Amino acid sequence: MFVYADHAATTKMSDVALKAYSETAAQFYGNPSSLHSLGQRAKEVLEDCRGRIARAINADPREIYFTSGGSESDNQAIRSAAYAGAKKGKKKLVSTAIEHHAVLHTLKKLEREGFEVVLVPVKPNGIVDVKQLEASIDENCALVSVMLANNEIGTIQPVNEVGEICRRRGVLFHTDAVQAVGHIPVDVKEIGCDYLALSAHKFTGPKGVGVLFAKRGAPLTPLIEGGAQEKNKRAGTEDLPAIAGMTAALEASIADMGRSSAVLKRLQDKLIDGLSKIPHCALNGDRTLRLPGNISFCFEGIEGESLLLLLDEKGICASSGSACTSGSLDPSHVLLAIGRVHDVAHGSLRLTLGAENTEADVDYLLEAVPEVVTYLRNMSPVWRDLQEGRRQYIL
Ligand SMILES: *Cc1c(COP(=O)(O)O)cnc(C)c1O
Image (cartoon, rainbow, N blue to C red; front, side, top):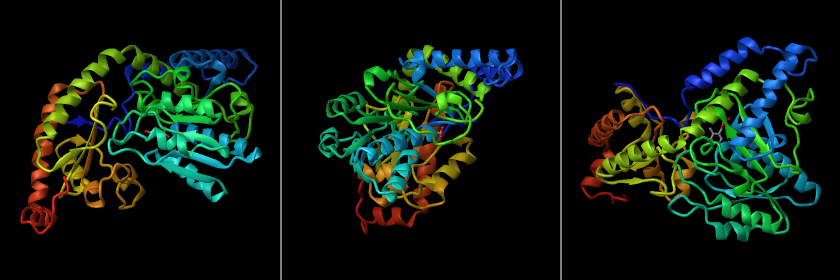
């Protein structure tokens, strides 16, 4: 059996996206900046995609900038707002403790460049404390950045409320909507954001392509200098096949959202209920304010990495919260932010389902995960200490 349960990391391209990608690559290979007819036909496809992406998130086509993905969009939004703020003497950037590294590392770098960064904590359910966020906003504040949905624990943040506060206080607002777009309804006017980042490969589009929405009038500084593409805000020949693939994937994801999110919620409920029966475990993140298909647990007395390797041997692709990709042994900043202690945070498992997962997949997960957890606990000296009372259970 093979179960792909790592859709928050990336998704397989859908057939419609692949078709749009390959047909565009074959037919519209002209450079959209060329004046000849082949170039102009590519330009028409590009502008058609821009209009369709804009409609999908209720934006104006002039507010859509094609980028290389979520990371670039986050970087550009934050830097643009920071530089614009600095010109007016505003050097405070407010964000949350659970943002993606594309946001956190950009903020860290800006801090070294002389900005003041405030990371607002989240409540134990993984939802940002809006009161504390508002209290951090003062006349020096240039930008507030709050993600729409968290990539590890799936929590959906009260971004409409944050947008309203930012508008009232006259502060720019960026939201990283990479995990949300294509999965739950996203409307830039309802959110009231100045910037929004999205990435195609998280909703069955190609990798290496995304969008930065920047509201008309919002400051925008290029990160990449060169040609005049994207209204002089993002140089480089557009990856038209990828943009067409992203557009097709987004429209298909939105058209199927009602059905797929109902299916995903049902599978999610079944998995959460089943895994909750494992002793000394805890669900990470709010039980209801979460993305359909996101399941994140901590199991006491085990190592997340060993869990992943053994699950992989059983044909299951999953993820842990720890930052193993960066080669560091630090547990996830998100799990620490919701109050998990180091040892517990290390025993994390993230399963993220997608539209092609089935009931049989969930049944297999419900068989494999408890089995592997028990196996690892039986080998763990920490677990023995817990069982024999030399150490106190936390969960
Ligand atoms: C994946 C992800 C990103 C990065 O997007 P890329 O397109 O892979 O650069 C940023 N933010 C969140 C919340 C993500 O899940």
